[in-house]
Length: 289
Length: 289
Image (cartoon, helix red, strand yellow):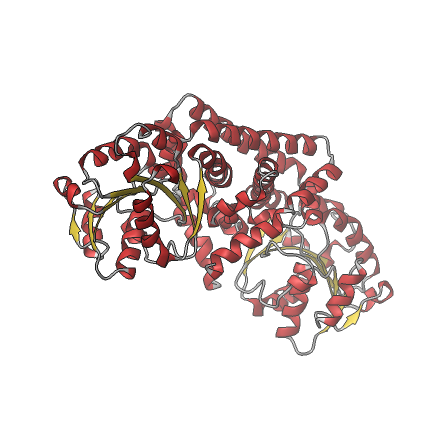
């Protein structure tokens, strides 16, 4: 089987590696518009060969893992050129605009919109590793528009990764991810900015920061290109989530101003309800199931 | 040497355990206004004996690790009763009001304001462990007001923990901690609240959350009593930090509204400057130095 991976960063690179780990009969072709990344992917044996655009039609499966704001256009070009039995999967973090863009494409049934809930704050092919997706969640959007036999191929490729499959509409996906993922990134980036701004004349003050700060701003290390694209593609839902977050912060600020510590305590205690949920997420991540 | 630990939660309990680990001639007495905590501290061998108020005068060292909004009052009561060669150290997260409260106390020289930059999101005596402080930073505030011989005793107790000592004024401490610690907790608690609010009718949506979300809201598991007290004691500095954070979020929101993605990208890239700093914090935490 010939798999063409377009985009060889953390996600594309890790998917390529996991395919090579699990399937001995797979040949992985790769392309990346960053020539250094392409070279590194070859050197690190993430891919077997460079994928030329002229060879798209020879691929059995094409995996698209590029910044989401460029995915809609490229997906249509890929669909134009692939052979009639090929499957195209994208791995992006937003789905609404992408699914809308190809809704009427005559080859829509050859496309599967997928979003693995997996990642680290690192990026590029050096960050890729073959177990990134193991035991994580894979969201499949509008899977009913994908031809059943091609959906089966996708599932058989994913099967050895032991992922939990979730089926969702593209709009529901974008709404929920705005809260449980995109907003976390904004909160983290802006926390990082606030502390950098105030402490810029006194950098060694970071010696005072402990693991709590490090944990809260970990996502501020994420790739700006990837994340600007996500905020752009999911602008509307991210706006809603951000507005609610700001309103909650302002309400907290008001309680602080009016010295309503009983109210603050009550609010913090309510948020502690997250504990079992968070412990569940962390356990899932640690135990790989 | 008799060490009296008042407050037997994560911090007080861990300090007691580390003293027992490092000094064979130490007897650890403990008290906690939560009788269950006191009983657990005995059962878990965190303390050797219960400390009665009538025995405060027999202690060589008293360690105060209680919610910071009750520390000022209790510290003065303790100072009243200890013998003239005894040392009292507090381990709280805020220092301004506390140091001000005892500034004119005739036994001010017997007090050392200390803040170990160590903790987890867990609380209570069960959360305590003897290596919590190992290789972490210990901030000593206004150490010039502590009698040199007593400061020496404090240092000799801390020495086997291999902590990095930092000397600061109490006000500077509170200002910097507002940014690198207290604000992180607010951002995390309010992020947790925002997501809980929106997802309350659809709890299984948390299956969509990955390690990024878990990391960003980890601090939302923290103890509401401890943290309400910190926000209360450091209200003014926390207000400044929170206002700047909200302003940064609003500026980001404006960029999103006006679709200024170039501006968003630039801002995210600038925050990436945190990378080496964060890597430093994480390395320090992991390697224990």
